[in-house]
Amino acid sequence: MNAPVTPESKPIPLSELPVVWTDKEKHRFKVARRSFVDPDILKTEYETIFNKCWLYLGHESELAKPGDFVTRIVAKRSILFTRDASGKINAMFNTCPHRGAQVCRERKGNAKSFQCFYHGWVFGSDGKLKSQPGAECYPDDFNADGDANLVPVPRLDSYRGFWFICFDANVQSLPDYLAGAKEWIDIVADQSETMMTLVGGTQEYQIRANWKLLTENSIDGYHAMNTHATYVDYLKNSQGSMSPVPFDGTGYDLGNGHAVIEYRAPWGRPVAQWIPLWGEEGKVELAKVHARLVERFGQARADRIAFSNRNMFIFPNLVINDIMAITVRTYYPTAPDAMNVFGWALAPNEESAWARKYRLSNFLEFLGPGGFATPDDVEALEQCQRGFESMLEAPWSDISKGMKKEKVNYDDELQMRTFWTQWQACTKATAAPRTGDR
Amino acid sequence: MSTLTLATVTREQVEDFMFLEAEILDEWRLKEWLTLFTQDATYNVPATDVAPNASPDSALFYVADDRFRLEQRVERLLKRTAHAEFPRSKTRHLVSNVRIRSRSETELDVGAAVLTYRTKMGLTETYIGSYRYRLVVEDGRLLIREKRCILDMDGLKPNGRISIIL
Image 1 (cartoon, rainbow over the protein chains, first blue to last red):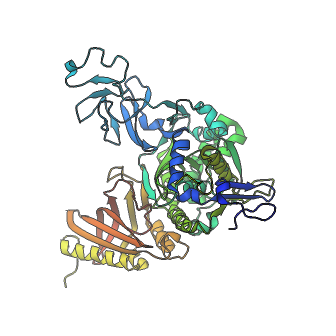
Image 2 (cartoon, helix red, strand yellow):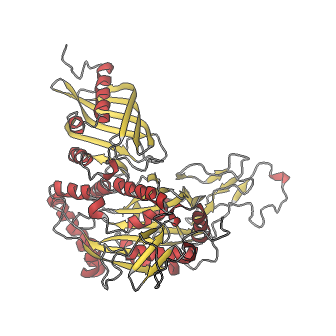
Image 3 (tube, rainbow over the protein chains, first blue to last red):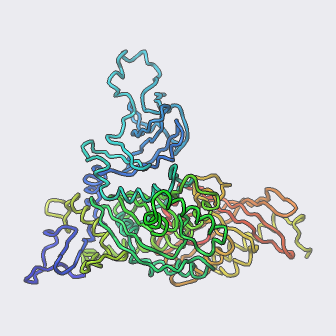
């Protein structure tokens, strides 16, 4: 990849360029590979993105009953996510206000209270201090201002069952932040008349690659035919695993760095694209599901919910892919070349055992570390990361596909440009370290 | 040599069978590996935060193959376009602590410990877990009706994938 040049064809020094560099006239969009390898960039990302943006915490269905709790690492912090006795949902930092130990050491469960094992302070599921050994040694008004309670996250809000937190108290409201993504979350949430629910089980894994590569990959319609050739072979080999629907669709910029691709594809969808493999029983079942969608939303929206696929990205690190099954995925960098990934399966709470079984079967065929597709994505990301070792001599990646066209295709790269443009606005990072940065 | 029957099969015979399977996997003789399974066989790897005996019909797994998908998994792994395993990784399955847990009229319930190493491009990854096998005897030979690998790990870290057969 050549370095960008001025109109006089004189290369611009890297240090004068932003990481994300675009030439609209020439329809070129480039990203400096420094952003995937430099520890200073990672530090900047934590300061300007993960400490400032709304981040996905968990799904309401994980806290079905009062007392239910989940502990989850969000941008390095352990967060205690609870439904308290009154039914209210809370998110607190999982660190004892006394001397700092992590108060809850279980991943999930149901509890009336949490006791820090170090000195025995006890907190309610709302985070309020209930008791501490030796209380007589503290003043009577010890916790009058609440500073001995578990510290709540600065901001907590939800949209259609998806709960988000923000470490910046001054962030814009969640509905404003989600911008155009809300109506796309609606399309997923509307698939249940009661509540979408996370099926038990987490696919948790680590990829030795920069986290932004997974963002690109999660909304990339371009790589499928190459990277996932064996998955397509598998569909062809399975009698009746495909409906006669060609791949076709569009990508959208949803504002604030969020993006989506929406497209038709031949695989079966439990809501509600039938494939011959699912037989007459499945046909009857899915016809019922579809008819109910038509009753609730009218023909056009019902067809869109049932027959279209969506790979949706919420800036900076939430993916909701409504494809042959629905996966909710979030991921955090642990180093410039490593990330932790969490993947869950989302389903309509009320769907039949038949539909649930085929949904999970569909999920595993494609998705996750043991599927027929995701391992090849992981390989691709790790190979990119290795390629970036040559970044001094090969400093740019190209994300220009489709820029010169008026109509955006699902397999163009608009959605990645949407992400990168927002990333640049947040970090203001340059393509090479400025003098004094080192 | 006496004919192998379900009623009389010994732990040593079960061990020989499992050691043979490990050797076949480590030598990438995957088509031959399929012949160790019954026609109604399943191969399961549950997620690391679900019950070891969970059902793939109601909980999220890493792998839940029926016989057809098991055959397709092998087909896939033998292709150059199975990118995660091209070039192929080197693997070593160490099977230990083999025990016949119970024996019914139709099946043996076998448990074992397993440690699998996968090496590719200078990195070696470790998969630690236990096996639970449901074994049957057909025509005097042991066959696998269910192979379940239960990982003793907090997610797949740093492995990132189960691109080999565990």
